[in-house]
Length: 571
Ligand code: 6R9
Image 1 (spheres, helix red, strand yellow):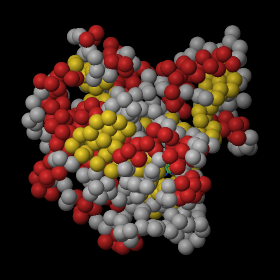
Image 2 (image 1 turned 180 degrees about the vertical axis):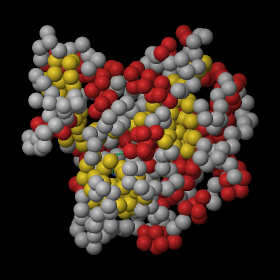
Image 3 (image 1 turned 135 degrees about the horizontal axis):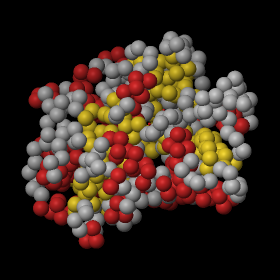
Image 4 (image 1 turned 60 degrees about the horizontal axis):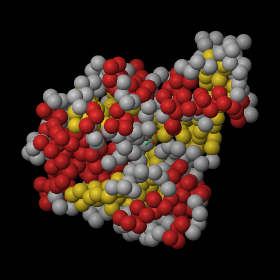
């Protein structure tokens, strides 16, 4: 094998040898794990929580929650009962199978219980980041036709209810005394609800979750996943996270991001693991304390976080005992080889990179415990998955040629639609038989995949996907902004930061104060992570004859690169 490598130092993992696993793999064998092999019906919340109660693990700890203020633990039995109660509350308000119900609140046990209850009635859950401001919230609720939302008093003001005629019920977790009549008091309803509940039994192709994510054009898209995705969540939990009985698993992602549901909720619980959920702010101390306190064995985080931990004072590593860690993984952006080497020194652990997307629902290209790691590579396709690099005509390219990273269609957790937008969905499948990711990559002669970049203009800042269009649309709402073009500017800590090029309206002069005001305008209207950390004023922005702002020219300006073909530019 070629290039730098970190050999496995592993004990017997769940997958065993990668080559063997690929040879004998069949999805059918995984499917048999679930209820439908006996009843023909299924429900994610049953498979993740209730089944453990029926199988004698009811008293096992399912959730360890902390956020600096609260610290609580729940058994599988308790989560089963509490989510049964919320299922009853939802039924009381006639919320039924297929309807979209959102959760918009900080991480907490109530968020988890609400989400499970929503799944139990067969509704489709829509998780939102608590950082979203009014425009971001409205766009998502409106597009999906949400009928209900679970939120907190602090976030309630960001839900423009009079502009959302389909939104019938607002459940509020927290003090409702000032809100009487306007909203439904979550706790009061829970206190009265029965613990007895029969979940809605669903087909594998019935809806489960909708995650909004960004593309390069248009508003955020509602990526729709069905119950069938659980096959992939369960399997990857087993062979990629390598979960076993006794593991304490911690995924640091928020449920507003697909990683926070597929791997922050579903995969660990489908595998019966004890799951740590931490709210509150990031700090190296808080995070290492969490690992030490709960004796975390398997840890799934993101490159930005690892880079911040790497940047922290060396001594902090000596202050905490991290020796419980057995397996460490990363997702969301390119994992720098330096970070992999540092992790090996700092934790005595190889950091296993994994690649996947909101649209893919689950991990597809990964590094596995018993496989040698090449720092900087995303790894190899999961057993049962065929990945390839295609040229722009859809032809498979040989090793070491850069092109479109694509996956053979038909894996269990593939999205089933883009809500309200079949044309957008079809764009992913423009080469028959393939899902085209929008990432560029190459495969080396040993079958390892190497990420090269996005093909479109999607920005990845601290692992969050940001669509330039959404930011530009907000920018032009500001009275001083005539036109705006937004790009990702390379940044050593965050991967990329958002940079906006702005042409001002007549009568406005560039100034530092105006930059600050515009920054705060986006921050307050959309979300902190979508606000441009850098703004540059220009007299004019480069545009095509059809009036589209040419972001690639902006990017070339920024990076001092040749601007390339300008034949379509306006003047
Ligand atoms: C799960 C998730 C997907 C995009 C994807 C790619 C980037 C994800 C990566 C990675 C390099 C990795 N990405 N994992 N880039 N190496 N291991 O991240 O979903 O938010 O939809 O983002 O993130 O560009 O196309 P999502």
